[in-house]
Image 1 (cartoon, rainbow, N blue to C red):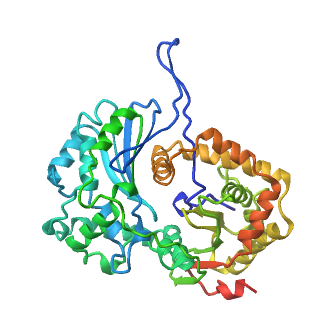
Image 2: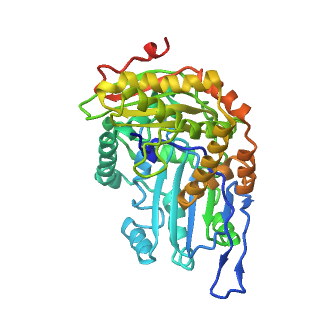
Image 3: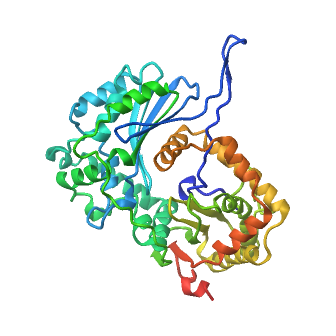
Amino acid sequence: MTSRTSSRLLRSLKARLYGTSATATSDSSAQLTKQAPRVTKLDNGLTVASLENNSPISQIALVVNAGSRFESYSDAGVTHFLRNATTLSTLNWLDTSLVRAVEESGGNLGCTGTREYMIYSAEALRNQLFESKTAEILRDVALNPLYDAWQVENGTVQQQMVIDIANMIGNPEIRLMEMIHEAAYRDTLGRSLYSPFYHVNKFQPDQLKGYHSKMFTNDRMALVGLGVDHDQLVEEGKAYVQGPNRGGSTVTTQKAVYHGDNLRLPSDEPMTHVAVVTEGPSLTSKDLYAVGVLQMIMGTGSYMKYSENTTVNRLGKGVGEAIKGNPFAASCINANYTDSGIFGFYLCAQAKDMDQGIKAAMNAFANVSKNGVTDEDVVRGKNQLMAAIGMNTEDSSNVLLDLGEQAISSSKITTSAEVLKMIDAVQTSDVTSVAKKVINGKPSMAAIGDLQVVPYLDELKK
């Protein structure tokens, strides 16, 4: 049987959906109208973008182009430390004071990260976000951390980092995703979201301040909001003044170079986990939507509870027939970044079934590359992709992140109508063409578990 793999294993095709539906008030004659995203470039270099979604909760985020891909070897894990340091004292707030102020407002404040971005976010009731100083605290936490030696070295942040690492190690899907990126890229996009364990207790204040001052410049940041007044957000953005360390960035982004390696981690996991990928399209590629449709055609797991979904799911059908009813999970991987991407499959099965399962998955992809896809496949794939993107945007944190990424990289925010139009324009020939391109690329492989019968990468190339 197949099952949908953890969403954390996959970074699906980027959603570009920002249209909001009009919402009726208690007065049936009054309507809250749709509003398009608004973008303002400030004189201080900061980009401000917002979308009015008529929510009673206001959310803002500072999205910074400072993710783990920018770490050096000696800085490995520094972004992991920064993500967990949001409750440390800042230039204008003591640690206890800022925590109390946010909690008293009923708000939330935190930081998450991807390989390319760090996202400092805050949310509160619409009338509390700015009045309660939650927005001000977010600004101070993101831009003015002190990283005092006594707080850096007291172990609070390190304890949370150790918990994060333990959770990652205990979840083979997440760990496999880190491994497959390392196998594919080595550095840049191959740098982990998690600190090496041996670095956890070695971070020093000067090291943290150095990375922060280098990366947190206004031209690398976007202040974005949902359910906020754009003009009010612009005024908040003007407070992101150009300090001595927030002028134009001097960082040169190292291009992600795809290599294609093989990483294997033997363990006593009850199931064996394998990922095989090739280089896929970037977020700016003309093939972005076609490869998204291809991902749906190959399959991302079951769409109905308890269903095997092996009838039209190319990947699940092939693996299911090969291992003859034994338990497994199979899903197509499609992760897109600013200058590269990975495309392939994830497979979880009993160790004894892995050789046949991997070969069946490879054959499913090879068949698409050789024989193409049908018009019926493409119609289904487009419908599933549009539905998946719509469901993805139900999580406002996804919308905030993507709004910020677009604001940093472009002066225009792509609307939902434009996205759906581009997906609908995908032709069968487009999908067949991109399938030949990505499936025949140089493979990378990562594996965790009992690997006795898991083939090596060179064996898969035969």
